[in-house]
Amino acid sequence: MTSKPEMTAAEIAKAVAGGKMSALDATEAALARIKQHDGILNSFTDVTAERARAKARAVDADIAAGKDVGPLAGVPFAVKNLFDVAGLPTRAGSKINRDRAPAARDATLIERMEAAGAVLVGALNMGEYAYDFTGENVHDGPSRNPHDTTRMTGGSSGGSGSAVGGALVPIALGSDTNGSIRVPSSFCGIFGLKPTYGRLSRARSFPFVASLDHLGPFARSVADLALAYDAMQGPDAEDSACTTRGLEPTLPLIANPVSDLRIAIAGGYFQKNVFPEAVEAVSRVAKALGATRVVDIPEAARARAAAYVISTTEGASLHLDRLRQRANDFDPAVRDRLIAGAMVPAALVDRAQKFRRWYRAELAKIFKSVDVLIASATPCTAPKLGQVNFNLDGVELPVRANIGIHTQPISFIGLPVVAVPVPLEPLPIGVQIIAAPWREDIALRVAHALEKMGVVSAPAPRGL
Amino acid sequence: MAEPLDDYIDAVSKALALPVEEAWRPAVRANLEVSLRLARLVDEFALPDETEPAPIFTA
View 1: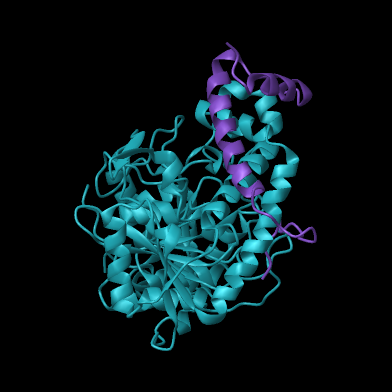
View 2: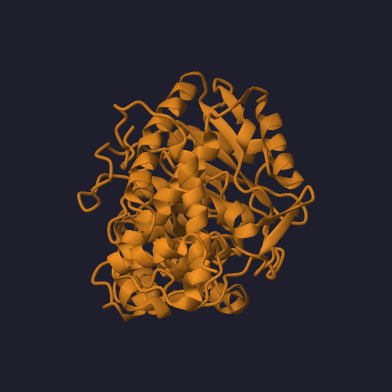
């Protein structure tokens, strides 16, 4: 049996564990696809071919010896280059970090994926220091959208979106501080899971905004998202924000019916400043789920503003010494945002953190009568690379500042979200399936139901 | 003519020992204007004195 690009992780793992395909063959197929297409997509910054072959051979040896190889046996995956990969400097999209010593140990989530049998094949392009919504990078060049290579992948996990959207690998890992999993999922037409804040360990990944950083998976099916997510769950003393909750597997639950769930559409703020494609995508999802109730999330614009303030100031604090010593080695746009962030008065940052508690309480009230909220993931489909403005209802708006307007008010209070791809023509666009804290299972269940109904799916790459 | 935020940028730059080259100043100023505008939006929202910050989300 030969690995094909359209094979899901679950299908690869089943074929490998069942002896129908070797882990090495699955790995070689991914490496060949990377070689064939990544010259255009520019999603990988490092291909760890020899490491991958060694891991794949070890999986095959375990199978030959009759050992349990885990639910991701032989599944190739790749990680945003802010994850520590043993032997590589963790560049986090920057020029500066290339001078770091090679990482001594893999990030916790890589260790957990590989413990489940998965095979790391490389590290992925990203916006500098994750302060980005476009997927463009001045040092490594932009990652390119697999459905139209003249367009953005979305950021900052742009390489993750491009690699999975282009079917180079079935699973990738990324980070999401203000939308960096959900935005590339939307633009690249794939599924992405931003779990509850604190759910997945961030140990040995390069931070951006400690109080907002999340890690999570991208995939081409909901079952693959759940497979990867389940493999990565669990407490980790090396991430101070990581939950001590035990494992809460979701894969066995995703096929449960959704008829008992109370599903509402996010109104008000979430229905303003959006292109018709985003409206159409939300409408299709809501109709399929029979959702007609509209819930206004109070003060969402202020929540987005507070997330912005916290991000720019915590990011500035993280990079203060680098800004003093190596300012000219930054992407100038990132540098100038961070310098400005360092100048925001502390009292205003504290106000933003206090507002966060108020807003969290308001959302908790909503989740007493609602199980799921639906909102667009991005206000538009993928813009052109380098595009500065877009025109909405006759008004010119800046692209960068508006890509994340619907993701920021949600991650601000750490809610779990599955971004689901609606395969519109000519470009796909994502919808957020938002659940109450720690209810990733519900968001995945709804995403799976939509997938089964044929409303959401990861389209084959149209630009390759 | 100096922009209204320039004196502030100079003072904070000095206090933080964070150099701002002249060529960067317009972009730094533009970004600071956005940050302060958004911070003001949050600041305008009245909260009880007892409200605690929530830097780490716990559910």
